[in-house]
Length: 317
Image (tube, rainbow, N blue to C red; front, side):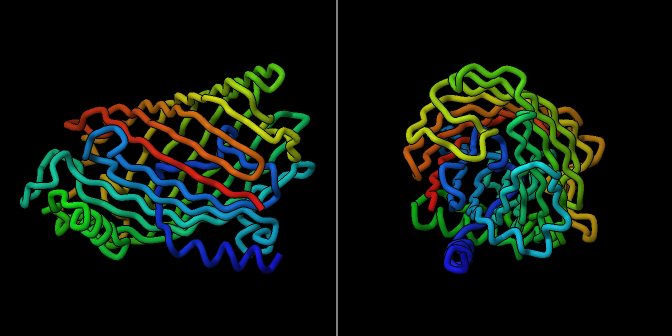
């Protein structure tokens, strides 16, 4: 067990990530083995765009030994539920619609980045067909989050145009966020069809919002409510539409403890945002691969709908 935790610790520093990536829904379950690591990379490059949510990187480790961390006391662990413990490191970067403008683009999305360490727990009840996931996010926004350095480095080595406006990014601030989400199967058919109701709530210094929706899995898969999987192979598609009620978004409005040079006014924030995530998953024994895309309606008054894609690779052990 100590070797597994050391492996996770060795891998985590090579990644960063943010609020957009969510691995706790059932269609992203990896349960053939009790422990796994996986890497999730999202970028608007996959949808041939370069605006708003420009990149997210996530490294996750799940293993029973992480249940010994002190943060377990802050996570929901109901009785008679099978609980998985994990730790992820997350980084997201956001830019306006054009990155070539050296001046502040008033009415456009501000440059922003967030870097967070995230202990989490996923509680599963096979009899009730329920999953309850909770997560703490502790980190920073602003220049110290490294968004400018990362985007400039990538663009320099790939020969792309350099971003000109990071000097106006959301200021350095603290991130302390808490998330709880609930998922329950309402229709299940021989592990070839699963329809699930979903709900989630986020509260904290970076993001405060509530979400409701449903996801559908179609294909050949193991039930995400079964702790011990038997099938060696899985292949399925999924779709997950949801409605988000936005209270506060620090990537648009800035941090609570600092003042940024440019933010989106509170009156211009869209309070209801519709999001749809869809993709396909291939799993063979302890290997996991996923390709996904997400569409989202505008998040602020002068914004536009946009989308991004992502690739995820996981290894169980």
